[in-house]
Image (cartoon, rainbow, N blue to C red; front, top):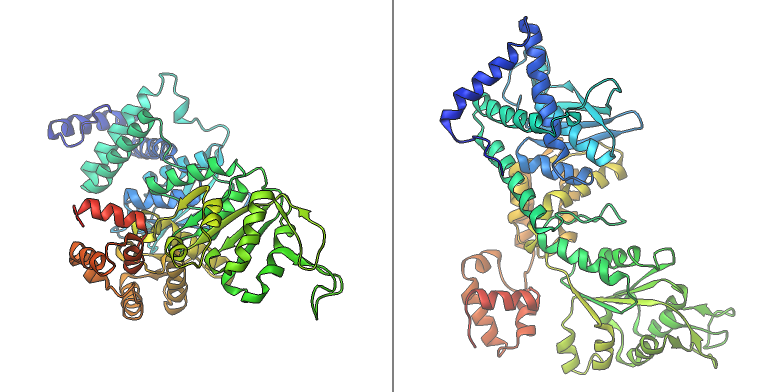
Length: 517
């Protein structure tokens, strides 16, 4: 990366002189102010264009990561998009001076929205702390045709790069807020590294509601996109609430079967004696009380599409052999039928149970396990991908707003840190429930750290995390793992289940702490 001079005191006076020279190009102080505002706005717009955002959720995450403030989209129409920004970097500590001053933030938004919408956009600040408001508000609209974009410079962008460094240094002199500039520099370095490595830092899916932020999850979703193109059976593993249903739908949406049915079956809700008719259906007169027209089973309903068997460990052992035949041959007979049917349906199964232990206990067929486990996908728990919590929280808040017809609430930065530090034994489902409770309990538009701490303390007192408290895990993790392994006679699957983590996570911790049997 080109050295921008940040952190070099000898460069500050030089930069300040350059800024004054630029401003002296005009004859009046009023015109000089216009030039200064354009410098900040246009340069920030180019920073915004390079934030690598793909949608408005990722925009919110990047704004938060940069330390510019907490942003939510409050309105979207064909004419304009409206954003509300709290804790604004430029003006949050300013008194009323009678004019908006957040040209830097406006430029960031204009550039980022230009990237998302794939057209040139401009942003105007209509509310500001410097106007006496308690927050900033920006209206983003299509850029005027006559307004020249800084991106169109004929010098290959050199002037723009110089202007970026000039503005960053000038902001540092003016605001003395090193954190933002450090984060911008770090962000630039990350983008450079990923460009050099040829690895994308985002992933594009048909469903825009699926958010992934960590490198681990981006790799996993890219893998899911690849295997979705095949017809192989998939077994999804992971704790309850990690999003297995959502990712099963991602497989379907990313597959050639996406225009055919996706049938969800929750195996925990089907009575034992009804599994066969639910899966395979029955003919007229198959049993006393049967519908005279018979019944189509879920596998047949998904003809050409996908069936998702959630918590497949609940399927009775006597039905597993019939399911195994279907997986092998795509054939089955309805209850009471004398003819065989052929159905082209892909099967995705999921479980939070220890299937290996169930096989050992004779509760799950080994041959069915191997037939299902052609492709194995393990979803990590939320506590191992905490980077995604801000984006997930924002999506949940937006959904609640849409469902209730109320304004979108936001969570302050300290509150987000609390959420990211919590262990989430209930994973994404617990996060959703907690945020829903908070939106009804908190009357203010901002959900504070205090409110979040109160709810989390209540949750910790009620949750049983596999018999282990959060503090015990944090303070004595190695000792705890050794003790549990001894109690389970070194059975890794049983120990992982007792600890409430995946087997792969247990192996990683054994390696991390150099634990030997």
